[in-house]
Image (cartoon, rainbow, N blue to C red; front, side, top):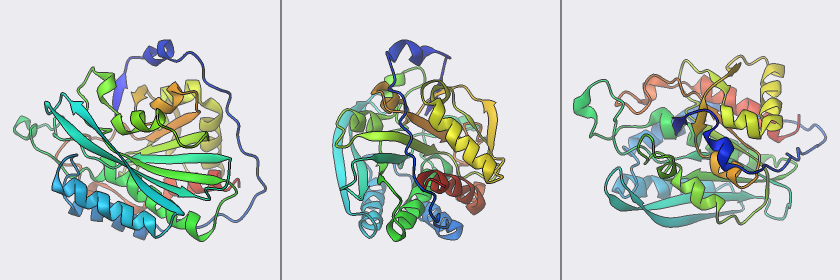
Length: 303
């Protein structure tokens, strides 16, 4: 993800369709197993950095597809290639897509990116700027969150169809070059196989000192959805969803906004170990995953 000047996207988006929130009868909301979710976070880091084009990336992709294959009605890979100026090469990318209740026409999308940045170029130690890193929070946390939500959906289906997508190539861009980021979500949004009422993207939501502020693009172009999530968090008594507004952030929700689909980003962009060698599992917390997971499940089940 990348922070961008305020209002840059405003000039690019011509319109965003009014959000069609799904009204459902309240039904029991499944629990969120924080211990299991955190184990999934740790397991991803055990593969090593998941940099596209590496053996570690391929191994993690196979594991993710295997895990989702136990839960979803269908799972498939969306593969594509793109040139990445950051590494001066073309790289293969893999979006991993899981579909629940494919017969339902009213659908929503939950997403996270699963790749790690090729270089720790925000590290205080400049000698580490050419090294890769674990990406425990920046990558693994959103995936761990959604794997546990997938288990909840499989065990107790919600009142609407759900797609869960793990995007590749989110973190391969250079600062100041917006179009080099979020490659997987850009590709997916231009090759949609479903119509979504709304999208929630989760990124860097596992750190111990979690604080999720209202992201700027989400606020301006999908405010009804963002308000619903923040209201749900308040009803659950969860204070990690802060009322203050953060800067505009280019992340995997933006390509959907560009296509007129209400989409919001849940992110703690103030995470101090962002793009550094210190983004390791010990900086993350099961409770942080659970706090975000409970809110998303509450929204999903219409409680």
